[in-house]
Length: 121
Image (cartoon, rainbow, N blue to C red; front, side):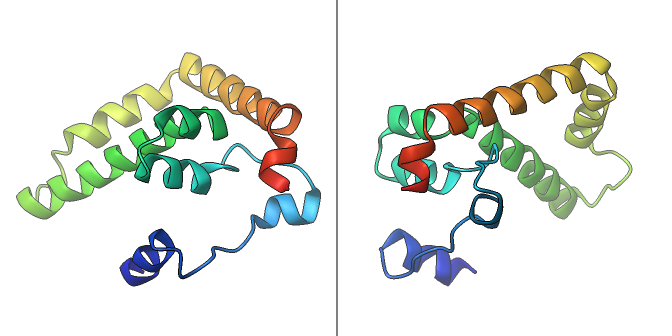
């Protein structure tokens, strides 16, 4: 997997199109994330945010999951996982569910109304 990622960064491998967009002709909240990663790797944070405004949230989620996995690997204490406990506590609140749902709907709307031609073209 790492090899494919390295080949993609160097431009030797093209990643497949999003099946959601290909089949339904609608962009999901994840659409544009691959191009946003390319923009970050080339140092263009503004372009990354423009391609997918929720990109920082996706990256934060990856960081949280990676940190939790690292915690378990280093300390092997499955019962004492502070990062996962904090995440579970946040996800139990109704405010979190409402705000995250509104955020996903807003990003999907932005991508389908504003960025559609650039991301599908």
